[in-house]
Length: 348
Image (cartoon, rainbow, N blue to C red; front, side):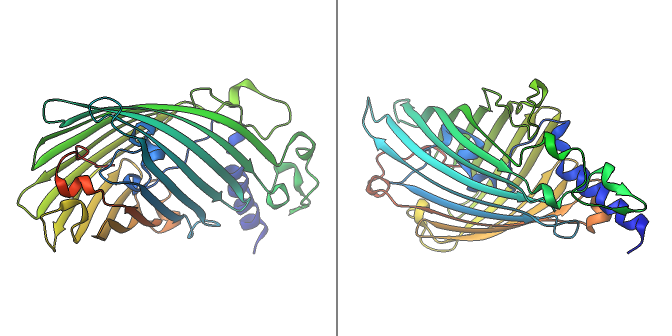
């Protein structure tokens, strides 16, 4: 490898791994965001028809550019106090995820605990107003020995470990964060329902700098998020399920919009546990085009997705973006079969 190529690669690694020193960091995100509802909005905790919900998701991206960015996530949530007043209920949940990024092994482990109150409204109990609160702990670490700094480039080669930056850096940082959200779900008819949500994450704006000298400018920015999910049945077995997610954090914004085509291939009497297949297409503005596919069976949902990169990194990545695989299980509730109390439009 030539000296020029070595210097170029090292500069890219340093820029990607150390950008947190001069800019506010961003939270994790998924293409299959409906497979990680507790990350999207704390108010979605317990927002489903069933006894309990368990989910897991895996993401791998940027393998063609650098060391792959790998993210694991797992969650569990369930109603814990029912029939508070007119079928209202309280739900709790926990979300764990771990993210590893780039050649510097920038690692982010987070654990979130959430609680949400769901109030049913309307004569038919076809509307639900939900509010959620979430608290979490995060630990981030980086392997400084794997990084390159500009002052290490001497005599045309890098002399790793000689940088004057090391004394001023920690290899770990940890903090607590507070999140909150609200959502509105409405089952307009047996064939149409929707969910609206809004959330604010990192309300306490915790410090997360790896620099030993604290700097007020590197507090984690508040992430604002808005969600819309719709389920519309065209026939007894075929439905359209459009969804929109908008997020804003510091100077970064994200808009994801698309639709899932959902077909029940089994008995459609009980839609929540019916055997079904789905295929979806989404766009993340100025970043990627995504496709999702999978199947559902007796409360179990399996999904895969792939991102085709359309951003400025398209040339370097050859269009390769991220691959995801998700698994979710909702334990069916006897109330579903009695058709008494069904959570309106469990879109997330």
